[in-house]
Length: 532
Image 1 (cartoon, rainbow, N blue to C red):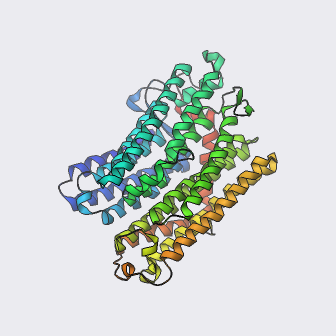
Image 2: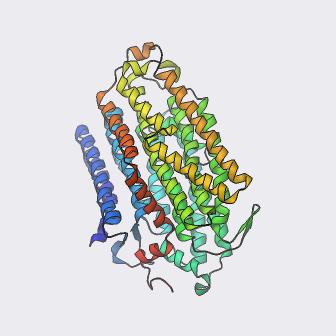
Image 3: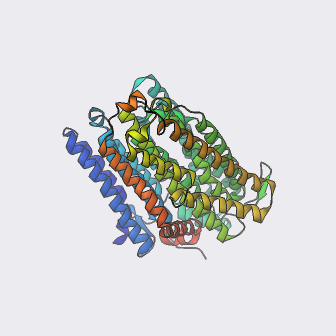
């Protein structure tokens, strides 16, 4: 019976969609129901974490009682639980901030049901145990985000939404082609069953050569959804157009879904596959041999492109949009290190470093986008040149921005310090073990990216929060309810940084689950069990 707890977060999101739709005529009630739905979602995630991490361990739920690999499987292991915590940590404050930030007329009818639809797609993506359902939940998540990008209407928003839609339709097509190809080659869509078959391909008559190309097709789709260079073009326009609480979700959570999919597929599903690799000057005997260099190159390129772009932007939204492109590079670089690791301890450590950085970035960037919303709400603009002296006008608002910026830079004892330290540690270990010019170049790129982060956060701070007050700031009215939400998120960043040990233990357990292919197969238990 306890396996049914796996569907708790999805049921909470589904119920919230229905309830916010049914209360659309009563605006205050709808907002209250929406925030309560966010609390219920966080509570369901907490119960799932209690069951998976502190209780009986990973669990699988077979929808309709149809056993895997024939039915639809939902799986909650430590990796899924970690990502769901990340989603809840950003989702709840974003919903609460929406209720006091977005114009009440704009909130009516569609806003809150769509927000919970976004959470539903995220939860489904993290919990699904088969590839086609992963595609479906991706699309549920993206359909909600399409509407949000076009939410305010107007030429700029419509153009951004169209660009976002076209690029993601291309990504979705690549994803569907890759999934169809893998089904044709392996004969299954269930990820545990696919992992089992790919580990012993001869027993199932599988030709492994096409799997390498199909895995690259999937990677291209996930890289586009994560906004990695060279697929980052949709990010600035979409972040400028969508409501800022939604942007906090897009930057903090939905981009991580693409990274999660890469980790889950390459380390869990393709982890046991032995196939000769000889492409792009890379040789090896596993898809990870090709994934590693690609992730290191795209990750470093994202760090440089995003960091340089953020340094010269004139608005909060553009600065943090380009920052998000750069920060996702800090997440995928350790994943690339893990893919090339010669030992299991280094692989596990590098994946844990990526997860810790993902959690840190979700909290810090979510906070900074919500601060942007509070500034825009108080002054009516997000232009850096027009909002000088904010710290004197509202010291608490300035303090929350300061905490988010320091965490992004990596100042102890905030979560960002540990995230950045672990990423550097993983890259240095790889350089020390490999000793190649490329491995050293990765460390240099990380250092350069860290310097760029200091430059654009300090530039934003000095232009907006220090100095003489501009007329807009002098007349600004800061909403105390918005500031209270910002204080809660900033406090979480400080508290998780001070009490970091449980966070790392959780991330380490999640990394262990990501590379434990046999454990994943055993939990799902596709018909026939694990082949010996």
